[in-house]
Length: 116
Image 1 (cartoon, rainbow, N blue to C red):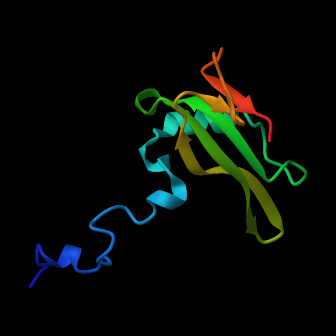
Image 2: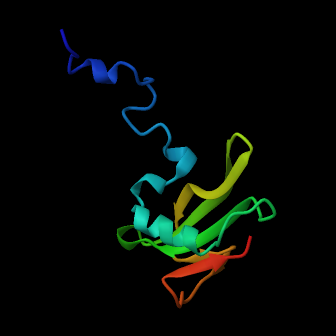
């Protein structure tokens, strides 16, 4: 009994060749450390019903370099209580750093918020 060493590869489609299936959906988000994502989410303030649904934040993410994080507002409900929170859903590496198509020559702080 038990799993065969070869069984792990039999569930993947043939065209993926072992690559991550979700890589195209969330970019390099899986390789960004949580401390950088938490710092970026902290720049947005508290999520409320009236706040915008989507934001983009540029952050210096250590080994990953300059990264643009795509953030959306999500809602959690339990009974009559509703809680809104921010969640990063995609990350893209910026090399050289760009903000909305314009090259960013200098990012003064470690985190620069992008108006969306």
